[in-house]
Length: 180
Image (cartoon, rainbow, N blue to C red; front, side, top):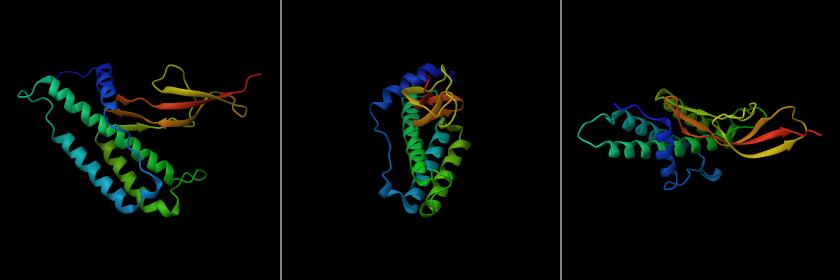
């Protein structure tokens, strides 16, 4: 099998991002039934990915790259949507699911665990120190007088890796100290 080039992967995924809209779940649609159905779809997608034979000789390399690109693009949209739904279900103070979302949250966690087992890792850098030169894309810098160092104060999109290859770059807002 041809070794994948991470830069090529980014380029392929970048083209697809223009075609497929971002996956978002409005608050009013978050319920246990829909979350459970979403979890089933995640498991089916993982099953399809595992059944795909990307080494087959009967298909040309471009078709294989297109298939992989579509799957990875859909996957990043799905994971970002799950992550956003989870953020809406968590109490900002305790970082625990709100009582009304406890069951739904459990299903989303289960789906994310299934994805991790398939080699997909999602990273939310919120609260971590900002390190210039990392793979995150900074959307804005905001001055915060209470900060002593640069901190990621908000993540708009998380980083997503598939088998240690970046398939979605995090988009972040960095808080900077007010230096007088």
